[in-house]
Image (cartoon, rainbow, N blue to C red; front, side, top):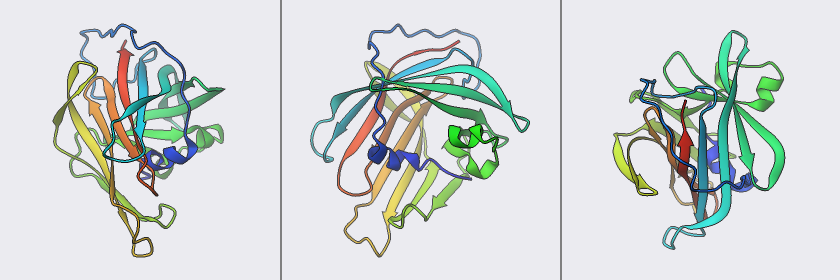
Length: 222
């Protein structure tokens, strides 16, 4: 199954995000919900922090992304949650399609394939492996730079915006191949909190030392 390589590609496309105030109230019901809460109306707001290397301080770069599940849709007998991304500097709507597959993994089908009516499993990107510690995926075709291996790692605690979360890190370790001896090994991270969603992601450019993080600043769960 395709994995979350867009984490590394993101630095090249530099998706720009939608302005949103940081002081949105955090709302959450006490209703029991699954690991991945994909109810219509759920919303998450993220700020992006970046730096040119791994030693300087991360700084907010003005990019804010608002993700909202706007409806349930069905394609080829699979039910997806349609997710709208809103970006400050991009007036065009950007959609993704999420679902939990039969392995319990949260997967993403890009809108390019959904719009064509294609929804095969191998086109779905694994966003997180839930609690499946046996799952591992190695992709050796990342533009001939090397390979990246994704798997789930033991839970850890992180603090974001004065909130402490016990998260499940889903990480990808990038190892350059022999043809690119000057590239550095790098790690991308997708830290998910059960019932809430992505709390923090860590991404890198393939070349150079630029890196950025997306931090959850607020959410509303139905």
